[in-house]
Amino acid sequence: MEIGSFDIDQVHRPTATPHNWTGTYFDVWQRQSSGPPVLISQAWNYDKAFDGIRELAHFKLPNSVPAHTLPGVPISDPKTYEIRALREMGTQAMLTNQPAILPFIYSEDGMYAPHDAPALKGREEIAAFLKDYTANWPPFDYVDVSTDRLDFSDAGVVEHMSYNLRWIGEGQTGVSIGKGIRIWTRNKDGMLQSYRQIAMHDF
Image 1 (tube, rainbow, N blue to C red):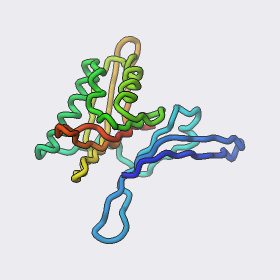
Image 2 (spheres, helix red, strand yellow; image 1 turned 180 degrees about the vertical axis):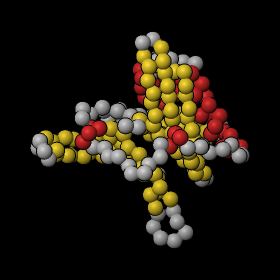
Image 3 (cartoon, rainbow, N blue to C red; image 1 turned 90 degrees about the vertical axis):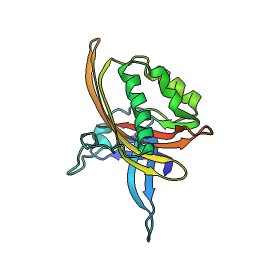
Image 4 (tube, helix red, strand yellow; image 1 turned 60 degrees about the vertical axis):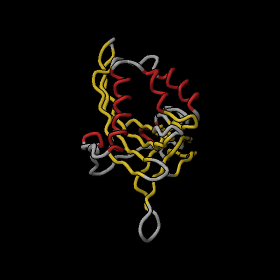
């Protein structure tokens, strides 16, 4: 896993307007039996909701299939069961409006790169962000978080995920879909905890 930050200067040619985009990226590389490693997944987030970025810094992928429409990884052994249990805890936290339990899954030295916000470092910083972020959560009536790929190693687990959320009530209604990448590692008690994570909304 390669994790870093980016700082991109862009000039919109028709108007000669300069723009600067900053954020966090995750690159997932896979070793091959021969030859150099290959890039299997890439994710990035911006440090804030930049005005006009959708029109200037995004493109449509040809023949793409939304990840949340594909079947997830089946539960086939204790490791996949453990990941699914952690995923279900997060789902229930959203459906029952109990966001205070979400920080428990992060390691003390964890890092989280949410959408439209700088990367957060350490459980305390993550917990403070989540408390503020979830303070005005709408009532969710549908939460589907799918594990799309798992790569196990001695160091931990790399999980690729996608999500589909729906809320309705209190004058609000909407749908959010997106994707994310997470590294799980075990703490001294043997429990899996979130060590590195990036979450993105689809545009």
